[in-house]
Length: 191
Image 1 (cartoon, rainbow, N blue to C red):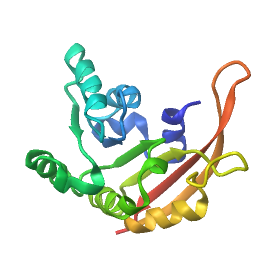
Image 2: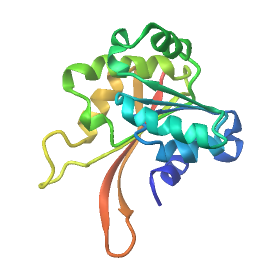
Image 3: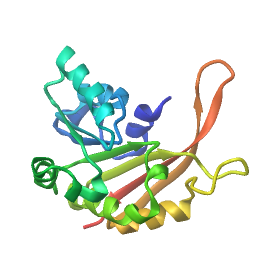
């Protein structure tokens, strides 16, 4: 299965009761995951640093029943560069988010922005139960030094006041003979 299926399998969240879930799709891209999440969750906040990606999601919103999706073009680690209404909106979500998903995003965040990014992620999540889920490339002989490791993930979680819940290397089946390894991390907000 894909990231979406693994999400429910590896977290304590129950999608059948997730009608009341508030989810942030961090690094939402063109909204592929957002499209799935919005059907299961009461509110989805799609955030991407690229305005053109957010435009793509907004086109989908205009074209369909996406009234439970909010979009923000913003760099989470530097909300001060976002316009005031975006930073106020994001800050208004502090402590209300059940789940933050980041599919193939964390490895692309520059090291100098990681702490600030994780602080915002930690602030967004509900105390004692908010969950952060991400997929990245696992470290192997072929991958670059930025690939994800358990140690790196644990350090990243720590920056946001999160506790490592589980880490798995999952083989994703891309149909036919194509499959690749994915690092799947789950962390929980500890307090």
